[in-house]
Length: 447
Image 1 (cartoon, rainbow, N blue to C red):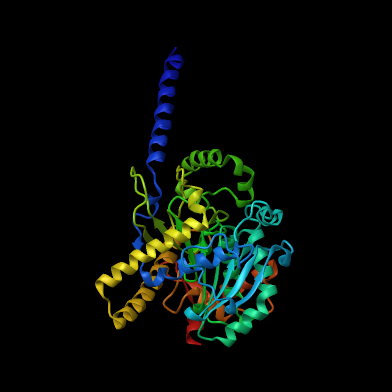
Image 2: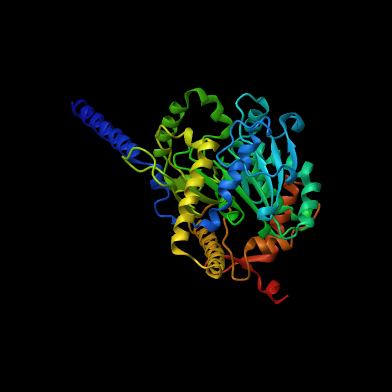
């Protein structure tokens, strides 16, 4: 009898739990993901609209007769376009791309196109992965994207090295949209690990802007490479938030709302502590820039604001139930809203009438703040016990010290034997201090 009486009570509790979940999920908007982040400045966000236009130019089948040209054009000088590769040129190994020498901004740009639904080769890149299949530099990455990036590095290594050495004051920028963003992030990781292939290029000259980024690397790598990789997300974009492996997403393209709802319910039932300690779970890479231009319970679009941070927990972990989840993934909308946000920032700077000398000082201050924020993120990753995470030491960042001891002859994609030798080298050079941080051994410091 008591069991029969408890049935309706249990049913009521379940209904209340489901109602609470639905209420919280419907109230959760993209603005909540970044509400505690700081605002981006015009100086750091300046490359984003310009790089979006370069990516958009790759989508054109005929650059002489553009179909998607934004107001003001793509800003590309045909004489500075070094090369342009199509699907036929790449033989299905990687998406189309352009290599552009931007003299106006002292930048060498490689822009990569996103996923094309009618191309089987793009799906082949996505399908070439399983959870935990590929490990590199102490973390997990998407295998297909890494192989595509390795192909890029092998094919274009010579011309990139030539340009880097010919223009020593130029930055080297990799950028891409959607599928291309994942390839660009993986290519940046490989170039940083193998700088000797590009004439020992300074790490500070390398940067990446992943637009509408794919979740392509584990949390420890996403935080560690935040000094060179930047991800740009427009409001409700679904791809940086959906934890479903990329190789499974295309199966649900014709019923994406069903997939989003199912992932919502599943992710809500998983504890954040369990999620963050899964070493194989992939995340959007690097420093995040979130463009927010809609508000809760408000219709229409507002002047966009750009928030930025290097988060460890709360890294776009919740799907947003929004009718804009797919449209915010469009490179056309991202370019438009990024330019609007940039115009708002410049307008505020013009009103303040900041002198040129003060602008230079602000850029130096911004660089220091980003460096400190990166160190704090590395330390928080260690505090939260993120697998394979380590913090920087007062003797220099772990990456800087490790890179100085890296030997040549390592393949682009790494190997298990090299990984073992690398771990032995780390154990020989480093030790943990009283607080658990990795620091150089005293014998190494004396040397």
